Image (tube, rainbow over all chains, first blue to last red; front, side, top):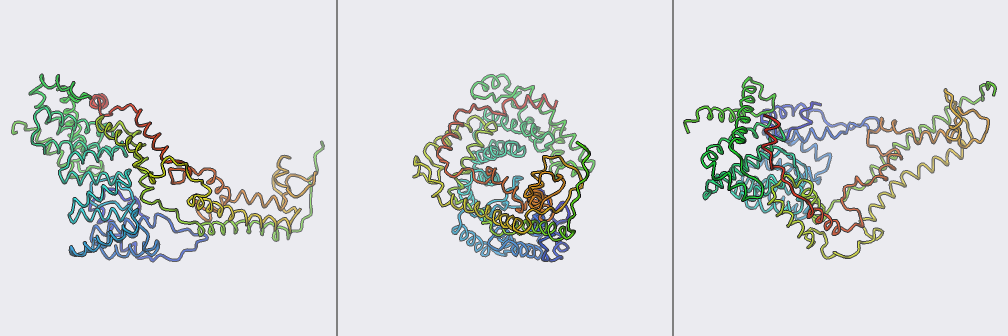
Length: 346
Length: 260
């Protein structure tokens, strides 16, 4: 069968989802026939993976009928008590729910299931929209419940449920990154950073998480009111380091270059202002040498600018998708570069 | 030695239809049957309860902390180290904290261990019983039959492999006895089963024996009879002696050297 159906990318673009769900009626036409088990093992895992992906795509595009069909096929095959099927069923019900009362009922049912079997944390990835590329499929009902709580929106309850889940299963990168996202939305920056560190401990080479770390540090820096120049400089340097590491891990990562350029651009005036004072005193106070020299930052800035303009140039030729960059990302990068061209305005 | 005249044995052509084919077909059918029987008899893998999961994954988290310590800052690492070590020493991660220090339960009386052993027994039985039956069937009806001649010459070493059950010294090695044909089928049908049943079939006993010899792939991190408390303590020690180095130190220099 078609390969895009089989290997669903973690981050599905809306158009791709639409494309997949449009194939649904065609794929669902052929009834699953009784297969001869002797010579013919058509019961492949791929078939059911396709049904699952189809279900998700249909839910996203609002094709509830096809989704219903997929769900029925899955539950006919695996039984309605299978954890995964239960998770999918919950997703379907959430999608077709019309008012808050229905959602409350679904939530209640999740809780009932969880009381019966506290390990039922069937792993459907949280939401389709969450910025996580680490999707493992474990523990669905507990996660469905958290997702629902989050979208209702009851973030505090979602956080406490997640913390409970993570206490039981502390090696779940997906849950940690979700938790970090939730903490961030609540303005609890230290906790968000802690959660991201946990993700990194599980997936040490995830360049996107490194970049995310830089972003979160920068956001927390912006949010703190009392930050003086030294703190700001320290925060910016740290954030910049994370972006550097992100680029080191993936040397075409647009988000990493964007962050590097942005942070170094912020850092440059600060450094040149108190160049003499801070660079000598700051290095000694923290154990690791957090200070950058002015020259290094300038070089990094130039590097990021060069790379970003290259990416933008290539992408504006129209083949941005070919390089794997999102349209919005490229536009943002171009905007950053343009801003740099008229520095006098600011 | 003179050029040996090719031995000829006048065989009833019916031997091919009534002995050679039946043995082959029976062997293939048993393999397929065994595959389906194994699939049906398989008990679903037992699910760990919440506390067991927590125990295992907490240990994994500790291991992750040790292996990937370099990605987090020294302060974060120190905090995590302190937490992990103190929790290990207080037994906070354990499934049954009250059982600390007690000797591990005897695997023979442990119900969980019993169940695993029963599963293994059943697998063995599904393999042994049909093989015993078939072998006695061949021995009872076809013992001492010469049923085919290989179309290529072989050295004398193959005699014991190809002519078991026929104790004739001067017989050319190319003649194959019924019992040997059975053994050849027993060991040689793996690819046939793969063709018929797919890759992960349970038809062949060789595959099963391999699986038994390598049980390390089993999901459980803890072997039955191993004390999780000891594992935690040793892991805590490993984390404690770790020399931490932050990978972000000097990253800008590396980056500039690599890319500029």
